[in-house]
Length: 407
Image (cartoon, rainbow, N blue to C red; front, side, top):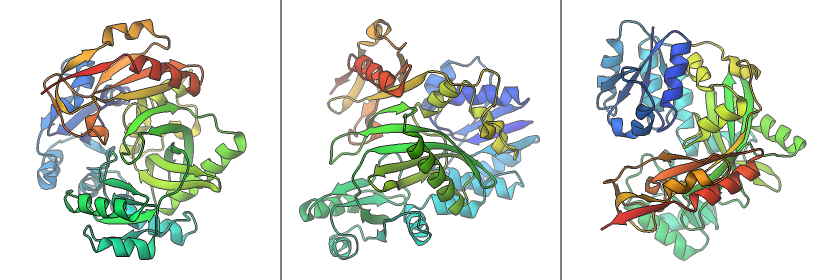
């Protein structure tokens, strides 16, 4: 039997191939750019999976290609960008999969905020705003300042503006008017506090909190992610509060499968930033595998095949966790240009924590955007007995790596 994927996150492909193999199935990846998976493909033997090169933004063509696979048993749904298309295709082919209506709800940050506020699960109220000068009056009248403006269907911290005064608000609206939005523009109050993400797995209304990841953002006004660590050691009562809250929140929007729920831990408790219906990006999946002592992507294959994942019960494999804590730091260049390589990679082995290098770009690539994750050229991952120790090790090691730019 074949398990297919309509694109995937940049990292995790090798583990998904192993998960499919362990389940007795073969993975077939539909992609429009193999270079996205360059690092992962280099880890796999030739012929480890089937790859269909196709325009994955052409939903009809992808549905036809998937329908032509004679033994297709399931379609993995693991990205934000392709989640709606994948849900529709799975439903159209009679495959197991999430409710397309629930997927559409989660992909719309405005609808999610409004639905959760109505159910008492979010204190914030969000409003649609025209990405034009007249939007300033709407924001001031309905949300006030400080505020966050964001693309209702945005990803990777793109299309997000933090505004604290009217001058910044008008500049953000001007920028939004020149930005190709994937959805609409919304405005909501900016809440103060550190940002975390809850890594979850849900099935038939039951949710397991797999752990909490720290998320260190760059200084305002940019909002790119800089470093993360897992698992955060919250006090027992706080961890229980987050687990109960995120379970209620995901049930309210009808979500099943992996969840990566970003939230601010305020003085009054957790407040939602956004729901991502997938394993966390960058190295979050790898962090989960190492800490829990199992290949968490087994659960991704299970849910694609329509069966209850063993990971939901906490003992998915012999030797399951607790493994090491991990942290990872994203490496950005100081200026845009064409990447020619990196200095400092040879020295990584001298740092504690067994730091590893995961490139997200290749020499020759143009790096233009430095205010969001598109500017990341690679990631340094390190281990430690605690997330705090792993964080210090990752930062120390990543500080020695410097992208070399030309132009």
